[in-house]
Image (cartoon, rainbow, N blue to C red; front, side):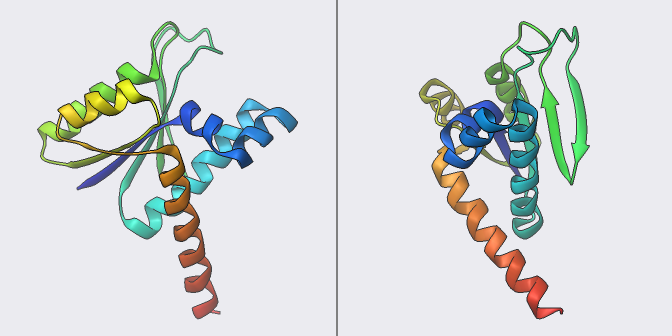
Length: 145
């Protein structure tokens, strides 16, 4: 199985459209839009998509997890970083033989994931792939109308 793990806040701050949404609307709106957009990528590519967010804006004492539009969304517990959660998820997935790709522009995180044998793409490369997937989804919808 192919798995895409997204460093949520890293991507939000790297994509101009999400960064703008963050300042004009809210953090929640930016998170929701990211999940919605990577969900389209997952539908088109067939990858299992997980988006990980730090819970630094929350008082949660445990990790929380939900599935939204086919995307696994993970919030770390208070005081724990998304980086550590991404490492754990990538390690667990790679130990089952899954093909792992992590989307982040964090240099340290990139090196760690590569050391595990995973692939890494930048936040901007993820945006390019999402845009292509959205175009493909539009083509498929038009074909069936």
